[in-house]
Length: 91
Image (tube, rainbow, N blue to C red):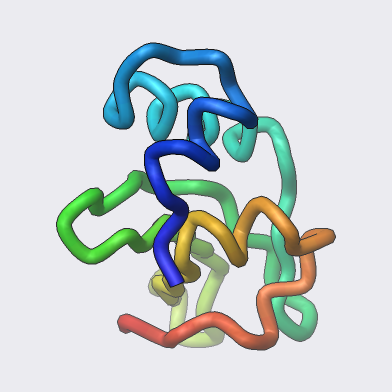
């Protein structure tokens, strides 16, 4: 469920929803997220879908690079302690 403008204002004190969402997303940028043994970092916020995106990369056995992308709603991401097991796998 998406945060309401009133909830965002209460949490951040920001006058507009967009400014408040940006402030809340910025607070997530310093956290590390994990799913299994992979570490994910924030990779953007899709306001239209209310999804915070996370990405992880790792060295693959064949010398290449593996990549995974996850998403959580902003509200869920703010409540989450770093375990992104409930995230939607995007790629």
